[in-house]
Amino acid sequence: MSIVRHLRSGSAIVAHAMSPKRFILTLIFLVAVAGVAGSVYFHQRYQELKEHPNAAAEAESSKIVEAIGKLIELPVDEAPSVVTIVDTTKLSDQPFFKTAQNGDILLAYVNSKEAILYRPSTNKIIQVASINVTPNSADVAADSAKQAADTTTTDTTTPSTDTSGQ
Image 1 (cartoon, rainbow, N blue to C red):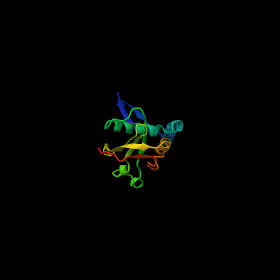
Image 2: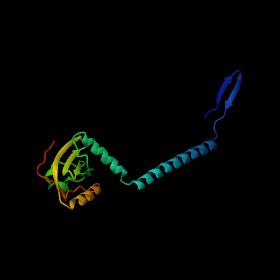
Image 3: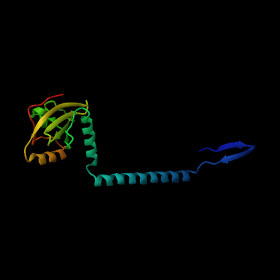
Image 4: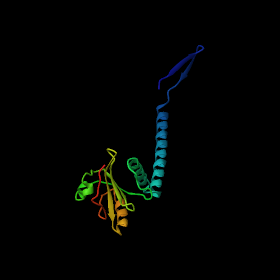
């Protein structure tokens, strides 16, 4: 800082610059306060994630279901399994997924026996189909949905041939 002089009524008031030592100590103090504040914030986020590990995924699923609900009527009496398609080559043998792209989202309503393929990049429903569910497949389908980050398979929930694209 420079020396500032101000003339008031003929007298000079002189403000001296902050000493380098005091400036460095002030800077260290501010960095320490910012570090502690950041640590507290991230510790709280960690605790929230530890208590509710699926909260972020559930929030994202809710946003997706809400977006799709604006395009088509959805079953209201059940929560869908929401799966993001990450590798379409694994699904190439299934007709329902012939136009699927990586990043598309599959909503599977097991009780309502309905599957919806949604493309978030264009905000369009790509395919809708009835699904056939075997007696033990509901549990397997739910487990598959939990593994959606790694793969998208429909081993036990297979769309039937009466598909209709929109």
